[in-house]
Image (cartoon, rainbow, N blue to C red):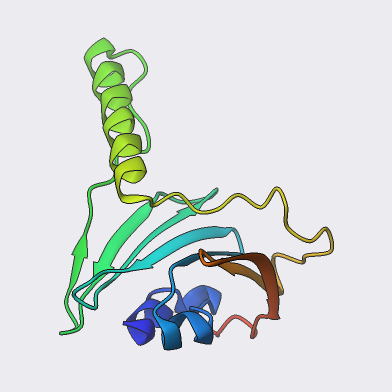
Length: 144
């Protein structure tokens, strides 16, 4: 699943920290505009939710057999002049937040992160079991 995760985020050269893969530890990473929360499920699957200020939310589960499942995410926008669309939009985001709360899929905020973190060239990450932030140099983005 770690390879599938890295393949998914290949355009940004993001991967899970090796210790998270080796120990199957849950955690959060931030880099190149992404905030990603991941957790390992009892069946060996890897669930992740990724947010980016320039893109829609992504929420997937990667299974040991190589398959994946897209979790439901709400629409990004609605027609402002459509009252029913506005109501449905707000309801969808409310249900989405409740699902994230229930499954603990909110990335950890960076409010206590090191001040000298370069989000384009460094990966900021932490494991749930260890509240300290780690910083690693990111590889260059691949030519796509």
